[in-house]
Image (cartoon, rainbow, N blue to C red; front, side):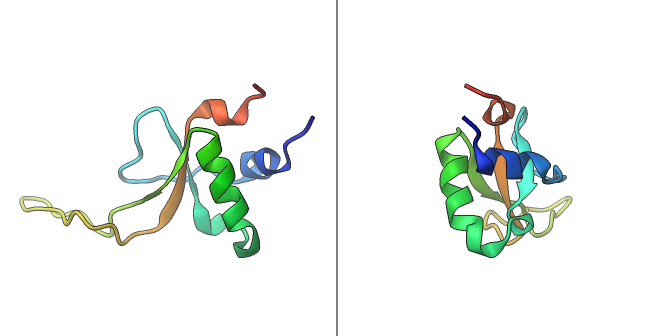
Length: 84
């Protein structure tokens, strides 16, 4: 049985995220058409992923703010793209 959301996600480009968790893949949430984002949000969470926000800026020799303010990303394990 095919999974249309998995197929769509697999076609999207991987993104460079400053604070991407090790071993996870990142895809910009904005690359998914807005009408489908809620469905994709649920799919990501059900496949071991989450929505993460990159930092807006990084401060060197100081304290980087804790609050997110950057782009939203889907952060997923590579296993989300394989058939179970």
